Length: 291
Image 1 (cartoon, rainbow, N blue to C red):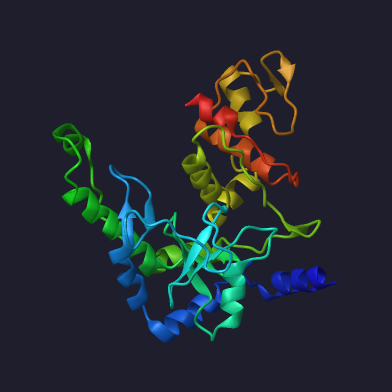
Image 2: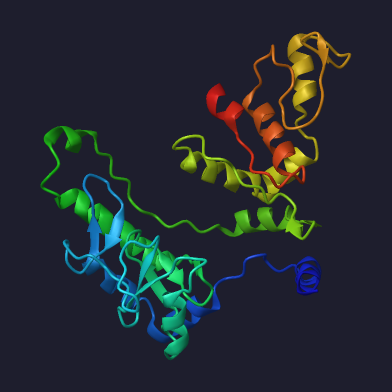
């Protein structure tokens, strides 16, 4: 029953599916951004260009204060009191227990191995622009002053100035005018479909997910503004619906195996697959290996 209520609330109330974390908002209202900047002193970057982690001492091995383990999937440090706790579902979460036993403000912690914020009450990762900026700036400073990089690495290194992006008024109007609330399919938002990692393709998948859920682009392809079958027919000079000697069909495939699809055709095929209602993770293999 709760899922139906939430469904109704999201559809008619035009609320986002994942609202901002209230505990992070409360933490910021109490403490501002100072705790995030203080964490810069504990950031450790594995050179060159390695992942950031949180360590007071480079040789420190963080252990959960409740059970003493250090090998569980995730170890978190409370941003308020620096208590180390573990969180390894489906086992009991000591991080969540710590937040529940303390006064408000101890819900926000940081993943000591990833330097990412985690809400122990919501039991999910959260994003904060100021914290992300602190991590990026620390990584940049480490890359500049690191003395372990060779001259060749310095020549190859390209440091990009970190500039947070916010949509301007024109971009906001464009998104708002082309946005619409998505329907639910079996208690799942329409278009909620994962992408399989095809071997170090996590960055590509992140970009594709962003493109797939950009309202103007989504509406363009789902309204058949670019039809990959018609595009193939134009390329083959055939207006009778026959591609490569065979009639095109739907589904997750691209059809017309004998013809090289354009980039828009590949995106059209991917939009059709992701918004087909099939919840099974999709593999964008054709898109990956075509370019």
